[in-house]
Image 1 (cartoon, rainbow, N blue to C red):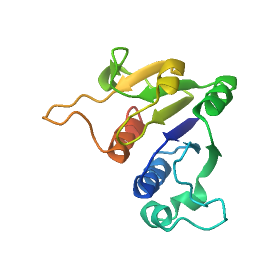
Image 2: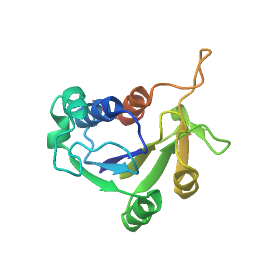
Image 3: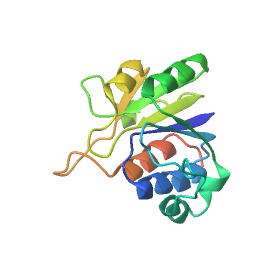
Image 4: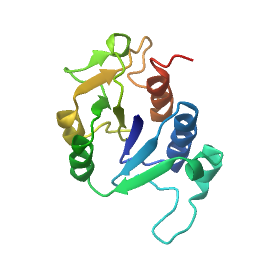
Length: 154
């Protein structure tokens, strides 16, 4: 099983792009946390930017919203899955050294702030994507694509 956690994303376009990529990579469910835009808002309206960039994947992939990171952390810890935060920290292992577990929940953080302290502390492992140029990070939807396809045997 493969899960994707989107924590406090600002951009509905990034969320839609990650739904589309998650569909292609075989993600079973997406967890949306905090103020991350959801495909259907609290007034039961379709979020047009997510629908547009997901090309309908937001309608076919199961998703659930959690208001607080700690709520989802407790939920994930009751499941048999490995929590993997994607972040640059002193605990990070490089993507090349990461072996994908059978059941995994990948945590992608806010576009500016990254993965929260709570999710980094709860992670079974923290993985980073090596950067070879001058920039320190990738767009979160691009990073999600790299992470989700790592280790897939196509």
